[in-house]
Amino acid sequence: MRKLIQPPGSRQPRAGPQAMRTGRKYDFANVLFAGPCNQRCPYCIGQQLPTSLNPDNLDEFPPRNLETYIALVKQHNIQQITLTGTNTDPQLYQHEARLLRCLRANLPAAQIALHTNGQLAREKMDIVNKYDRATVSFPSFDPQTFASMSGTRRMPDLAAILQESQIPIKVSCIVNEQNAHQIKDFVANCHRIGVRRLVLRKLYGDSRQWLVLPDLEPTRHFRGNPVYDYRGMEVTYWRFENTTAMSLNLFADGTISAEYLLTKAAQSTYIAVLPEHPSSCGVGS
Ligand code: SF4
Image 1: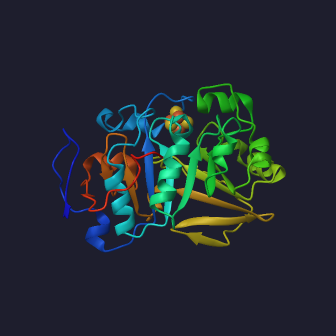
Image 2: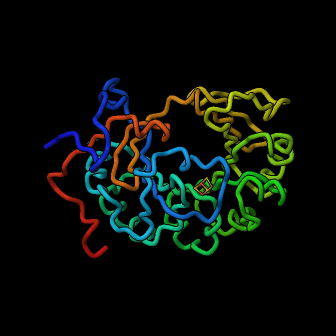
């Protein structure tokens, strides 16, 4: 049985989700957590979202609407799932390992990724290594710049995370006026410590153009974003406005949104399928 649903208190749907309207396939799916964070990044996207999407769910198992979400992931044959957060870090989720087991049991063919700020990565390396891959958001190697961009002086040891992990680790770096002048050194440092894939991200809505690798020509483009080869390290300059990726997002309040840009989720249609065969997430996992 299939029907449109919304979490209590949410607005009426305006139109069908983009994937339904266009018939395009989803590229990936996000499970989003909300709650207090161990960083206070001034550009945190969670601050731009309606508070109703962000109830603290760090101690909630299973996440609201998970079974419906799993049914949708199956229905659309989505192969990539990312655990991430709107205003918190997914490694602060108290049931991280349990949720991973649940997703593996219900979606055995899916690749599961972690998107973290890295603050807890070494402490929870046994869990990190249970993912298929991880992305660590890291804005600067300079302590002052790191503190001003993350709101904390506690800088994760990125080199140690790379050494201790047994899965591929991608590094993601927001570029803004605070670190744009350091990007050349940042890229060199990432290469020196063994990063294989680096993504430089422009903030959504930032119309400024940063010269990230002025001496290099892109070797290709991925979804409209230039990809460079820096001494064997893949560097992508990701500009959200140019992104055409489609994702299915499960928010902390149970909202399921087909909008990739999380800030548009509150305006989008929420779609869900009631599972005929519920997943086993609630049972003994
Ligand atoms: S680490 Fe992520 S969730 Fe936490 S404050 Fe920074 S941007 Fe927001």
